[in-house]
Image (cartoon, rainbow, N blue to C red; front, side, top):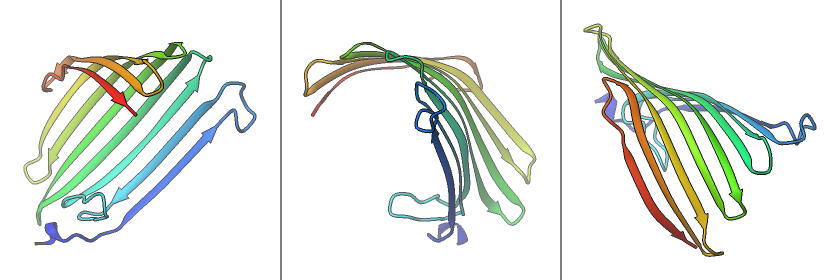
Length: 178
């Protein structure tokens, strides 16, 4: 079966720029864009595309507004095509758009907020069927560096405006010792 051969080609193009390093702005604004394409069954030491041709493209902008504030905006599309038969393909398209703000309110603490829109469209060509789902997500994360070896954090996330989308509510409390 052709869907289980671990061979294929992959292509990747990535560009990054920092406006401060280019002498254009006082505070850094980092811009990144990428486009990646993997054949069905492309295999490497860390990933196999499992019989799906994949295209991944996106853009991110991270701006440092001040010493204490950063904002991040991103848009991403991942499209996976799987050959089901000689006359049918299944195409899944995932679109994500997000904006985040990071506030470092003292030398050891930060609050991160994120607002995201997620949309998934699944189409099968032979039956001309289509299924769409989408939702908004909002989250907050608080980080605190207790000392040079211990960081503690807590986060909460909820989904809203769900359309054919499973609720995605979560919370996390944790620590990192290094």
